[in-house]
Image (cartoon, rainbow, N blue to C red; front, side):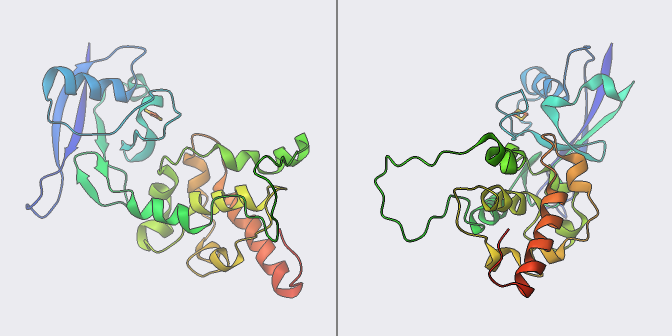
Length: 239
Ligand code: FES
């Protein structure tokens, strides 16, 4: 038994619209969409271009639009789609470099912009200094640390797709990963309290629905809105 994949191929110069190329691949019970693409690459068409690495939902590089929804292709089984066809496209909202590969430079710049490190102030301590945490302190931010930077939340976000300047779900969740860490002394108010940041979110919640790691960026954003509102009336409050 086979299943048909309809794969977007990038045709630069021809109004940049993708053309869909059909490939019939074996329909195996334990094959993910990524296995189907690897079959195409190995046996049918070596020119097909896409990203992947770990094959186990960890590296975050294999995100694509599968039948219109942003999914990790290594975690999406071909058998989900009955007799097919399965339409595979690059993630929406990002410039296409080739076939299924998108440009992630803007995304990486957004992650960097939230100061994704532990900020300490007024200290000169030896590098060996330890900052112990209780399990409860770890729990406070652990959920937000599970992000694998797969871009699915951006691709699903109607605000980001219309306004590429929107800071976006993963970057705000990343900021909260540090804001809520007991070892951190920043609250990233300058970056997050902006129309293009938390106040741009309309709480559609698609980011949370598609997140394969249950990070819940929508909750992270609403939570920071409360923090920002409190900080406006009580300037000394944080978090
Ligand atoms: Fe690494 Fe899919 S290949 S997350």
